[in-house]
Amino acid sequence: MEEIRALEKNETWEVMNLPRGMKPVGYKWIFTVKYKADGTVERYKARLVAKGFTQTYVIDYTKTFAPVAKLNTIRVLLSLAANLDWPLHQFDIKNAFLNGELEEEVFMMLPPGFCKEEEETKVCKLKKPLYGLKQSPRAWFDRFAKVIKNQGYQQGQSDHTMFFKQSNDGRMTILIVYVDDIILIGDDTGEVERLKKVLATEFEVKDLGQMRYFLGMEVARSRKGISISQRKYVLDLLTETGMLGCKPSDTPIKARNRMESDGKPVDREKYQRLVGRLIYLSHTRPDIAFAVSVVSQYMHSPKESHLEAVYKILRYLKGSPGRGLFFKKSDSKKVEIYTDADWAGSADDRRSTTGY
Image (cartoon, one colour):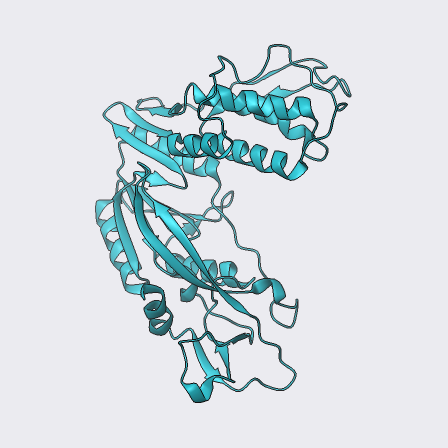
């Protein structure tokens, strides 16, 4: 019912006869379960989405690109908040895509229950960029960016999802958005509260309070600093792969490991899916970053030895599921960089590997 009310409140479509020459896209309901950081169920969610994969380029849409927050930027902001003792605020925009403006003419089949009996042969002319349309992410981000920039915020050059504003007395407010999730930090308390009110006026905002759980990352704060980890993510991954009861490994990769391209092939889709999950995990687990970079070199044609290397990483994670990053509170503002490299470490082409 919550989804239906949101569609009606935002005046998502109007019912009409299908114009000659136009083809409507289909629709479907998506049902998901949202979890809290501790793994308990937060809520059950239903969402009506358009079958955007049936859209035709130029006719139904043109531009589709929308920037996504970089995890590197998020880590930098957490480090900044730890050093400067800034509060971390988190928000969620409900039904974010419905706040965008749809520029193209798009028609969709009319879902049952949304029309009168005499309207069953009609279609929906979409007025809002419904979830599933190819242009929906861009339409939403353009609307959000316009609202924020109208409040005097500047858009980041290296990460366009970050916006910042500096007051006359030097105080700073920084915001970053990942689709419909928002992090807000800064030492300008008055501006933070003002921006909260602006967002609540423009959109339906859910204030999640202090940052606790973001994009699968658990965030914990103490007087010493801020830590981020993905314990639930690791345990879910081990459960899905049947490795929850495995014997832990002390290291994520064998010493002087030299994998080659020869061997018996394995399921490529399964391999790519596992490595993709590990790549995301490596953003909070630098201890597996090198091992993941090695196994990711064989995505196009994985062999048994490569899959075994992936399972070794999983066995290593079994022994330390809650390990993560800790941003220590410090008075130092220095940027420190460490780098290293091997020499001709690849058994296939004798290439070297650099790390930083």
